[in-house]
Length: 85
Image (cartoon, rainbow, N blue to C red; front, side, top):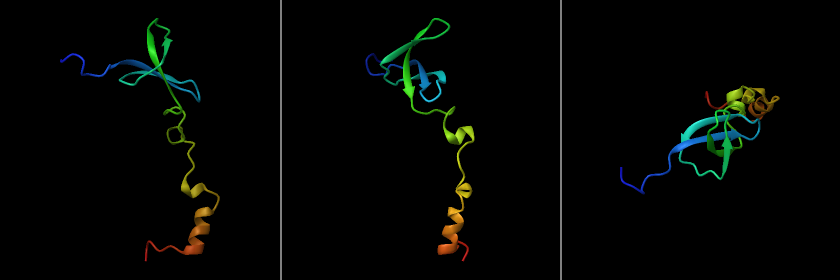
């Protein structure tokens, strides 16, 4: 490979700030912090606002459009169902 043109592809720890969940994967992301894992490795740390462990879609806590307290029914009563006509 040619020197100096490829990004720094290495192991990085991603940490979900909402629940502390961490996972290690390979990435080119620029990280300012580092963390020492249980196995003694010191890796770059990238902090996430949300991950699959805390996102409502993946945890099953996302509200469906049908569970919005009758707002959908109120809309259909007001404007009617025109999609089937």
